[in-house]
Image (cartoon, rainbow over all chains, first blue to last red; front, side, top):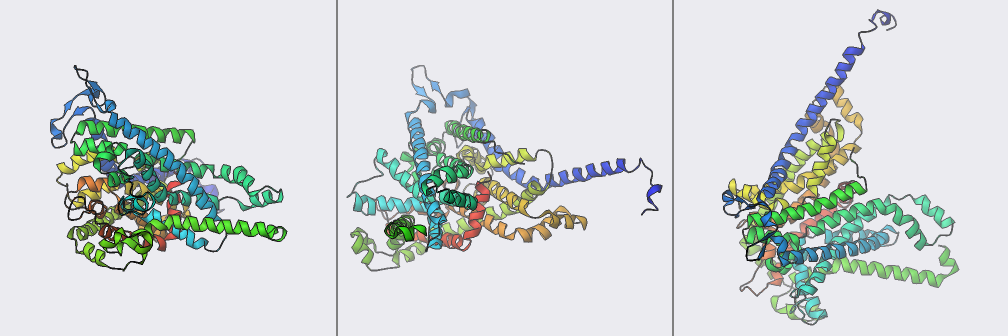
Length: 316
Length: 283
């Protein structure tokens, strides 16, 4: 080694070395591209292109069975008033606004309750007691049950002639028949089903909290109550925010519960997705249905973007 | 511990209240499911009985016999299985390629691709329903499990890519570097070196994606007319007349569909929690 060293030309090594590094990086980039290609094609096929079609049809007057005969109508699917003063376009349809109101009520109330209940369940499961393993297991059951199944289970319990709640507790009151009570009945189903999910995420957050902080707080004589508000909650904030956003987005696009428990017609005035599907599939109005879909898409994406920028979520 | 000595009565009161809370939580989480199981074993004529008599009423497996005798339910199980397994298999294959690239390679545009995948995973399915419907009918895939399977990639692929990427990042780099030094190609490295290490992650991710695909309702309702998947069959389950809801068989069918999921979830408990948090918390 020492013998050969002086023989090397002093200027030669840097050039090939640099070129070689770029070559490896270039090759790696190509390899990454090929590895990503199947996924990118699949996403373009099932998300990109259909989304483009939806946006395209939102400004067309089109029928679902004959999409080829679509004609451009601008924003008339959204807002259009005829010469006789009849308001067309879904933004002038009171049913749409009813669906929006109901979806927002559903989202805000159910996500709030899930967070509170999920926090309670997570705090209980996080403390040491006999039967902890059992409760941890029980927690997974509602989450593992398919949404359609939980909808049917609860529809049965709400039933006014058979149901434990509808007949047993309320004495034959048809909870789901009246829109003003139906929304609360639906919230109860969603809270039951997804409290577990919240609890799981919060539990994961709790378990990553440093234990020595609590020891220090104990030494200082802080009560459990103070420890919860001053230590647990602030430290849990990031995990909690992520869980909140994921649950909110899920609740905003809710469909199954409404459709199964209320039927197609009432679902259309109870959830935005139900309304969109009714216009699109049942009424075959490809143009109007697509316009509604675009509106829902914009609402949800706006919330995501607001969240990502507000909390500076980063991907390396 | 301190409280136990200084104020035993308060200590035991606290403890009792805590266990009351535990029982309330367990009852809240499990009771609806327990009630559905119970109903599935009761005769149609006993459904009217008041709760205590209902619990004590004779047990029967008639509802299960009826459900399995129903051809559309049996077909539903088959189609659900085909569609969910197909979507998960494709997603795991494509997803592990993509996760390897995103977790291990440095290249321009990576962050943009991560954003696109995250955006798709929060996609409202309704936003593509019309577009997908026209595509599926154009290619003659309406009422065809293949069409449904492909449409499920919209939520299984972003999910698997996202979760697997976070797993790939946690694998020590030396393993892959050793393979690179030995001259292995990226695919060889992935299949020979990373796959064995990733096996638990693949199982967890596959299971979670399978649950999502098995439960999906909106696409299944819209893209299939006679070859319905099992959630749609259960939602549409009807009796002799339109107003007669056969609750016994509906509950039996619901239990049949749920038991495999609950079994899988209980077996893979620990992995599922890590899979869920990898998928959600790192978002």
